Image (cartoon, rainbow, N blue to C red; front, side, top):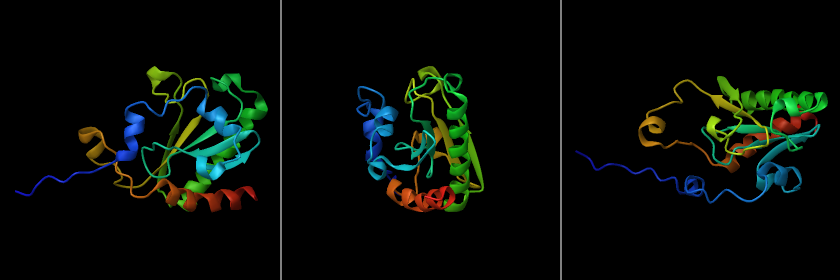
Amino acid sequence: MSAPQSLWAPWRSAYVNGSTRAEGCLFCEMAGSSEDESNLVLCRRRGVFAVLNRFPYINGHLMVVPERHAGLLGDLGPEEVAGLFEVLALAERALEKGMKCSGMNGGWNVGRCAGAGVEGHIHLHLLPRWPGDVNFMTPVAATRVLSESLETTYGKLKPWFEREAGE
C-alpha cells in the first residue's frame, strides 16, 4: 500500500483560524481603495464592483458588491439594484468567456447563520462550474482543490471585464 498523499492549502489557515476578520467592513474598504489589482477587483461600474473571492469554493468564484454599505437587497435604491445586476450580467459573460465554464451557480447569504462571511454588506456570489468539478475532497476532507492561483484567474478574467465594459 502506498503512503497517503498530503494536500497542503496553507493560504486557507488565515480564513480557518479567523485571523482574516478585521475591524470595519471589508467591502467598504475595497470600495474606497484604488488598489484594484491587489484587492482582486475586476471592474467598477455604476456604484458596484466585481471582485474575486479570496477564499473561493472554486476557481473563478467572484462576488458582485454595491459600493454603498447596505445589509439587504431591499435597502438598495433602484439605480443601485440596476447597477448590481448590470455588473452581475457582465461577470456572467466574463466567466463564460474567460474561464470557459459550462454552467454557473449564484446567490447571496444574509447573516452568519445563512453562511455570510461578510455580514451587513450585501453581495452576490457567482461561481463557474464544469462537468466533474465536484469531487470527494470537500465533503470528506473539508478541503477544496483549486487548480490555479488567484492571480492567474484574475489575469484570465480582467481582459473580459475590460472588453465587455468598454473600459
